[in-house]
Image (tube, rainbow, N blue to C red):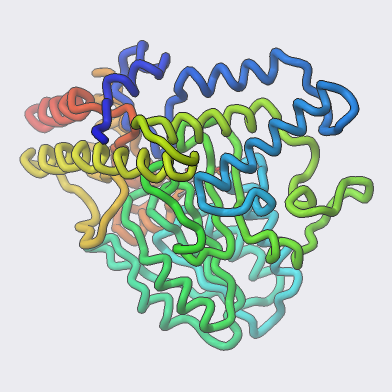
Length: 402
Ligand SMILES: Cc1ncc(COP(=O)(O)O)c(C=O)c1O
């Protein structure tokens, strides 16, 4: 089924402001049904979850529906879906909880490709317990993290491997299933950062082999919150700090305080929107598979247009020559022009392509870009060819002046 980008764009009120948005990897724009669902929850009777009043039942339904929606999106089980404020918060919480069982001599593996949210919580938890941190490096020329890198760091005392499913700086995608196999063979757990992958590809937790998979709905057309998905059987074995009167069931025991019901309603709407990107039949999971495949094809063609265009402009350097499939995210710089200036120049022309290390600090440093980073252009479901051409035109104009 072909992807109708004009029809998709018509659902995004934010696009009426006229900017070409390449800032999706930082947070996507939101389609009208998501905004409506958030407002709808806030505009109806909602109380704490319960069964007595209509308001309690609505709150309960919103939570149940959102867990099911995320389970459909990720191929998991609703009882294994934990909601939190952000991926960062959920990862810190899990790192603190899991590390209680670690001690000197134990080891954790983190990677230089990852966003800091999947590095620092583990490094700091390890430091607090006297645990050794092993760093997996990536090839800066390709921007790819090889399985052998991680495999070489595993040992009998490895407790956990934290790896990204896709780099938010370069878009490169480690071979997570192969990493999972090696990690499990060593008797360790695998914590996967799926924040940058989830908006761009079909996800199947079982196929990935992730014990934990974290993502953020605000990156895939939804509201600002975080999700951690895991096998509920695994979650049953983990006991985080919690208030005495709050429930001890899974997944509720991992959710501290009252959930943001309106954001959960928005999350369900975002998953439904993704499932309807192309017309289709069957279960929501089936429709998501078809939609995400069509989206991937659309985004790949936009990425090709972008990468080919940038490669033709003298004075532009793109980072990461990926050999494997990557997400539609490109990092580049312009010779002789500071990334912040490129960012500003493009912004003045209505093209939003920010410059930063985007919290993938280790990655930026390893690429030789220091803490400054470079300009990132991310393709989103609403990106069309005219957006890409506007970006290329802006860069051409800038290099013509530089
Ligand atoms: C790859 C990746 N991981 C983690 C995060 C952090 O997500 P959150 O803002 O939900 O904490 C981001 C945010 O940019 C990201 O791109």
